[in-house]
Amino acid sequence: MLVPAHHIVALPPPFEEPPYPADVFAGQTALVTGGGSGMGLAMARAFAQGGARVAVMGRSLEKAEDGAHQIGALGGQVHAMSCDVRLPEQISAAFDEAERVLGAVSLLANNAGANFPILAQDISANAWNAVTRIAIDGTFLCSAEFARRRIAAGQGGAIVINSAQYIWTGFPGDAHSAAAKTAQATMTRKLARDWAPHGIRVNAIAAGFFPHATSTAGRREGGTEALQNMIPAGRTGSIYEFGWLSAMTCTDLLGGLTGQVILQDGGESLRRSLMMPDYIPPRERAEGPWGWR
Amino acid sequence: MGWLTGKTARLAGDSPAIAAALEAQGAELVDQADCDVLIHVAPQPRDVPAHKLTHDQWRATLDAGLDQRFLLAQDFAAHRRAARRGGAIVFVGAPEQALGADQAAAGGALGNLTKTLGVEWARDGIRVNTVQTHDRGETLGNLVAYLASDYAAYVTGAVMGVGLDD
Image 1: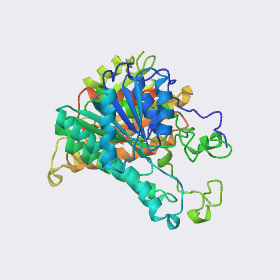
Image 2 (image 1 turned 45 degrees about the vertical axis):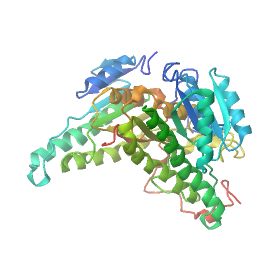
Image 3 (image 1 turned 120 degrees about the vertical axis):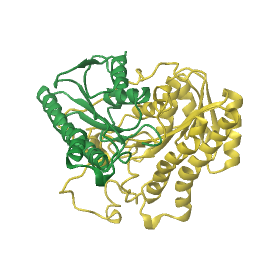
Image 4 (image 1 turned 45 degrees about the horizontal axis):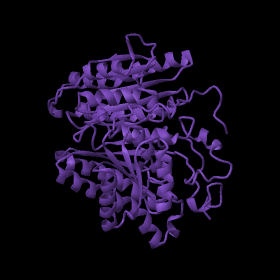
């Protein structure tokens, strides 16, 4: 169903009008994991709009280079690298490379993640390990590498983490991601506490539905038009407003912000009523429009 | 261009940092119920152990931290609906567990009220968010101004703090 015409839908300003000046990150380098596409690319573009040099990290160099190309189109320096965020040695090498090419990394966006709907009973050990370790270990390892370098340099910095709106409710049909995304949010507060004495801030965005070319919804037959009425806000999110909020948490405008998990989901995770559609176990909706079989 | 250029904002309660940020972002501060943005800052209650709280003290905290906020928000939303225009509400107060049991009750109630109103009024284009914090400085001002602006168009029903002890 389409959103009824008499409903009012709140919209963000256009992409060309970011919420911060074009030099808010001038002289700084941002490293974005999984920055070659989707939400990571949105974060990377937002940093670039604020004048940061951007290191784009991806498991696939080709994808990272694609993203870097789009970021470069906004002006400013960008560098693509390949790295598996589960491997500390690769992370260290990637930071070395980023710093050699672009200068000291003072901003970090942890976005790398894999996610796909699957019944819990069908998740293989490999799939479980991949999804949870990319998000949980990857976020920890990249953040710790970042912090060690900032502490050694005697300088602060800012970290932002791409978490999800289903971290407080569970996510039936996505058990690996439900676990992984919550770990990212709960480590946010503790990392922030550990590194506050060093001037390093850590925040997370509990992100809702921001369809893009590489998301499950983005590949949905018939597109995302029919999904707009599902969200209380009357629309799915525009990916650049996610990028902006992520980057905003790293600006000096919010210099006192740390340890926070900010929900940005258009009310999606909060919709609830006494009467709801009948409960259908995930295994029985596996063949439906959101089918994964 | 500021985040709130062209918008009218009503700041109920006392916060110089929020007033400064709203004005710096281009909002016109007004004192009438009919406006684009409503910010409500509750006074911080004293920290009194539960067994020493009088019922009057208890009531005063719940009144300022919850009841008055709901009624004000209700009135604001009625005006926005009548005008067929969206709007934004930001509640600001102390962290839920930072003070006495009165604040724990009022703060928790406010948080879940925020989540509820954010959804209930979503299709009126009215967003509702809350910041519960010890902070009184520039970050609070900027965060509130951002939440009140169209830049936060996809943020509603969110409850957050500012610093580690929030």
